Image (cartoon, rainbow, N blue to C red; front, side, top):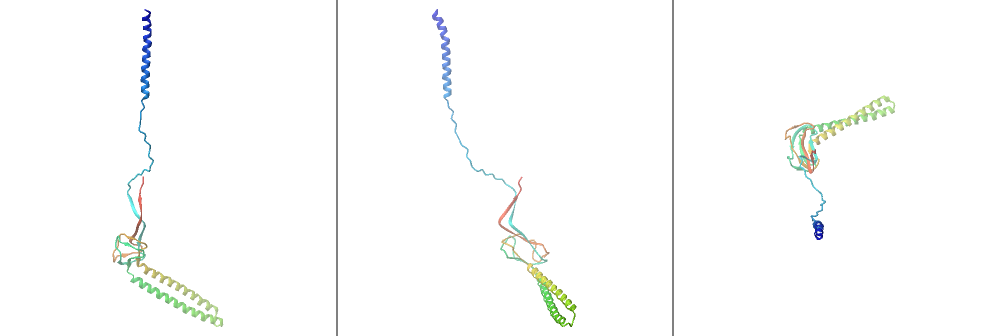
Length: 214
């Protein structure tokens, strides 16, 4: 009977020990499982982003070639889209009128110069008469004023002569730099007013792109 009581007391203890041993073994097995994962490292590099925009292309050097005088187009030496070099002749206006004006300006200059020389000779004579007290100094002052006025006429005639020569040079239109000829709106025989556009010239070796950003 004592033996049965001992067995009854020992059995729960053994059962609990067995359960604890089972749990410990299970826990040990679970802790021994190691998960493995692939390790990667980030790559540092430049990233390029591209966007498309509607742009307007214009050459760095662009100029409108306009007439500085009024006249008719006599000849066009180039064509649209043609490459040209600096100083190359592009247009010529009818310059017969300018040649006549230059001839008139030259004649007026020579006439004014001749009148001045005559007045200077008269002034020299009057100065001699004044020194001999033949005439009064008033005569000398009068002739001196006349000489001064004629000198102004000579200067004016010279300026007019230079202006007509400049107008004659304006009848020949040349390229200011190397580039390409754009549209030519007026043809041979067209009447061109002062400031009218004849064509435009573009140097396309470098260009600007103009576009809008939000």
